[in-house]
Length: 381
Ligand SMILES: Cc1ncc(COP(=O)(O)O)c(C=O)c1O
Image 1 (cartoon, protein in one colour):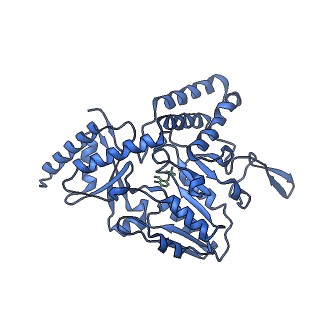
Image 2: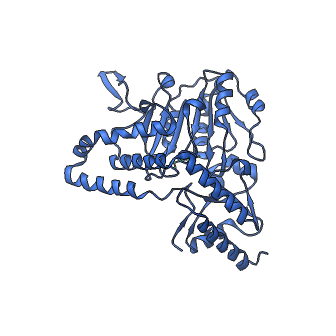
Image 3: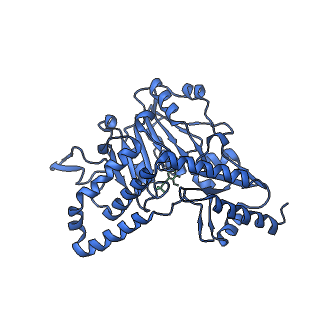
């Protein structure tokens, strides 16, 4: 059996065309020079904005090319002017780097409210509605989180939030959903959305994007400006340039941007609905066949490509190593990824098995065989 890659929520295996584009672009840089090739390739590079806009149903001018999800989220959060009386609301599955950004900023707003999910990871909408007030400046939710594959009901949350407080900002961390779950920022009433390239969008590492709704852009104070987004107008003053991608910097990798664009085009051609359907089928197949000595953490009515397990007997770290020895990539997610979530489930580690469109039931059969051997070796009946 060749390598079985079930760590797509870490980084998926880039599609061949994107790899070819990446290599070709780097070869051409050597031939023409970096700046010179960028100039020649402007039209192709600018396709990025259209392609991402299509992916999330926004306008191209609302998109920025970013190096990853964490920086996008951190920079944009730090660009939202906050008042001492403002509250921020997050959920009990929050990604720790986002939480850290908020904790570092905690003197700039009043309360950080954390919505407690029920044991199935669900939200009671009337309870949520009661937690939102005129003071709620920002809500952030992980559309799908790193350590649990359930898809959060972002559309309902957006509706409740905007009805209760139209001046609030709705942020979605779509790092684990973009590429495997349909995204429509208009339908979700989303103001800010961040994602990465290397996971379900199947792009290269070192890529990501940021969406900022044009309606809120003028109220933001960009954390970072450089000469692409601003100009010096006098000794003491500068002015923001119009229509420049928010928070982008002068220097970036055109090769990565181009390969990322191709990857997203490939995903769009396959169809997000088709990808989602296939991944859910694989997740169901896994649950049906991996049914001994294992506990799954997702709500079965709301599956995605991400599955997380603990063992009734034995350690997931040992299982991870055993699978790796047998050429199966999975991932151990630990409590540092989401302190809130792991505290809630009273665990320190889970094994994450995550699929993408190129995985098959044959590969799952192989994983199940190796898993059963593991149980035999460990004398678990
Ligand atoms: C839900 C979520 N948000 C944000 C991130 C951070 O993404 P990046 O590593 O691209 O900064 C991750 C990474 O795993 C994630 O799972």
